[in-house]
Image (cartoon, rainbow, N blue to C red):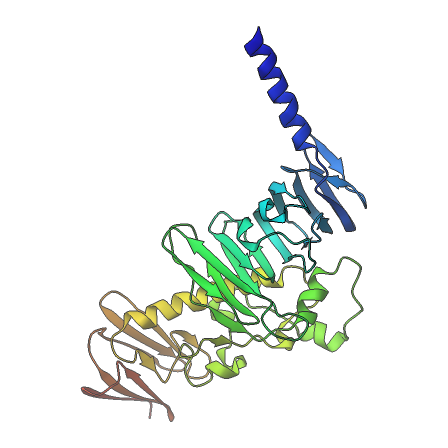
Length: 361
């Protein structure tokens, strides 16, 4: 009997702890809801509890926690508040844990004296754990679990802090404005950080809950984000003009952005992942890799290059078709002349073998 009473009291205490007000909805637009014991219609000032699930469909939501930390969610997002414990008189014992299931959100940690220790804040995805020291960042999680994390600057344009992205195989640190990493799954390393050429206006226009100002039609009509690596024009990225894989900076210019598209970071995640795969292929070569054309399809040279475990294959088909294969371990300087169009390609430095190919009249 005593055990039964204790069990009932324990459950009652847990239930009471679960309904502690930890924050509220402060911005809202469109179709959103909070799922607890059942789905609840989300309204401004709706009180949140630990273990609440925040869901958006064709809508956006902004949440402010007791310590003034905020998160903003775009369309089709799903976030669980795994844990939130806060005591303004004992902030060192406070903690927060969020689980980003899918979608895009911006996380802005408290800048007040009430803020909890950053080591006590953890953001989980299916693929990684994000530890923060700062900080202002966005996180995008695809339907299949891949994640893109971007560190944003403070009001002075400096780093807002530091992010440590950890998987089972290691971690990377983001500590510069607009540095980004992607994660495929828990069993792979996060990608090496790249610096994106974006700005806060792009992020704010995507995450703003109230409708953004109308953007000039010529920008909207020309804005696009490539869906596959075959659609990426690497000449749009100034830093990659000479060597598509030699630099850490990935330029993503304003004309490439549709400000009104809530999922442009999702598209950017796809592009960065594909560029990372090409980078891995280039690093798999010895010496200097491939120079003179990009791995994959290069719209300037019109050459498609592929790297396998043993070979490097070059294909160019305009009027005539050229297809050649060389050993991945060798060093080649290849001059391709097709109908007067000359391309010079080197593999692994090009110091050992010289190959001249001429096609056409």
